Length: 267
Image (tube, rainbow, N blue to C red; front, side):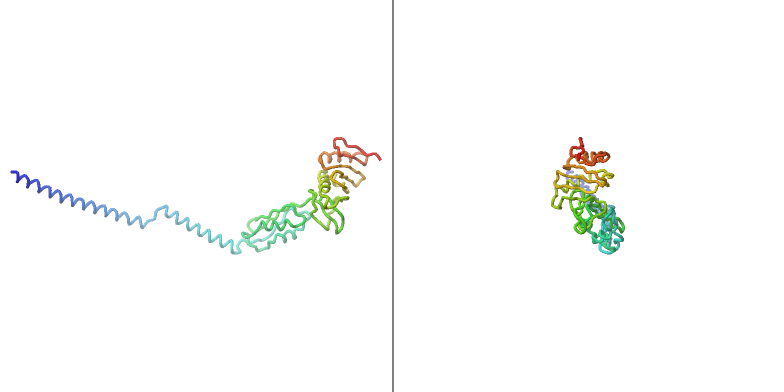
């Protein structure tokens, strides 16, 4: 009985082993089939992220090509050089000074160089050069304010509000003469220029000439016979107001070096 039982127990074990092997082989085959069937569509259909990346690269490349074409080819070109802010300076002189001509590529303009060139024009104190799309170059300038003239004719030297000589050989109309001063007398020129620029417009129009042997001895002479001693350029605004007031008085000679107490000169 022991042998019979042993034989019966072995036969089912062999059968079970075959069944497990067949089931294992079937499972592996199914997995392999699932993997092979899943891999094929993944390679054939790119993911959304990859599509976005490809489109982005294409857009960048196209933009780069277009930018290169616009930069190197005469597509956007200068149609005019527009100058603003001139009163005394010649517009054509400024346009020529920029070095920019019609047909120049707008993208290849050197605006800093153009501004530096224009700054060399005598009347120009400040300048900015910029692009005004699509085809205009804008030149905006601020001119020197002429407050006095040293000498006359070909020897004329025009002085601005800072006391600097900025123009030689010509004198604009209506500018007061600076006398008893030289170009090298920087302190005296600054004091005289400060006095003139501080005057109210209606008073400045009456000014004929200014004398300043030194920075502390500024004298103002007006067309209607008034003479006002300013002294130094300190308290310029107060002295300008005092000057306006004394020009309404009968006395012709005044001292406003102390603007709080103007005094008339007798004799």
